[in-house]
Image (cartoon, rainbow over all chains, first blue to last red; front, side):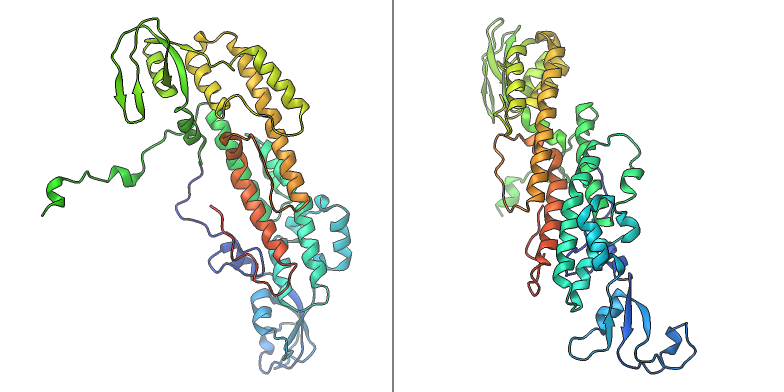
Length: 211
Length: 187
């Protein structure tokens, strides 16, 4: 059995992020191609490619997800966010054709998380993105399942290499199920111990109950 | 759940033994056992049977289904049917392992039985995986899986639940405006 000294918080996956999830924190630093829709005065030092004092309207730059989410507003257009190329029409066709051939770790590595987060920005392609992300997950499921449930006692780095972080977590869950079963079958299962609650529990004496 | 915990539950199953000592009825919380008389078969839980066997105080009578012909029949049926067939005991895998490891001298053709049970197990796990895959790819919301045993469910539980959780959240993305992924929390 795998034990952690702390309980890791799983990523939120959907449009909601889990505040305490390490994966979601890393995800919020993914860069998105974006374009400024108004002038940002005196923030020119943030944009290394030009020497001007302000960030001009219409500058194209890359912005981390958390910043883009904070600045993006539906009514007052401050920034507009473009889709990263994996979520564009061209790549969506590739995912549609055969999701298993794509190296999601190279393309992501937070493909599912970022795809869900992109839905915060009103893009006409939002329904297609959500659909493509879901279909990709379903299409790749069989492979993740088979490889995680069959690889016993071998080097899994080659199997895991092309998986997104979300799929890696699933892969680990599958592996721990397989490993604990195999250990049991080989007679290497852990001895069951009584719960610490029970061990520390003292029998009540009648004198304690009757004052 | 850990497999050893599943095994612990399986040890409550009843098995027949032939003791070679005599002892009056013993009274336990789980029920009364005995009386034990040399040569007379008596029903006891597996944990007691194994304990007595290890101290060479009894001979274990294998359960009825632990028989090469019966298991071969089950194996053929399991291979033929697309759905899960009823298993002889809800703890067949655990009991086979426990009894064969500790009392293989009381069970005729122990090696064949071990292979047969392993075959049945493998067929069922392959089926389980196949149905999990079609469950996911057709995006079903519920499924009915009869005749699965606890040990079988246990090998794939965490993986399948995590996957369904992710899929649910990705699917709730399809309906914009709905706050998805909040209501559900397994464990």
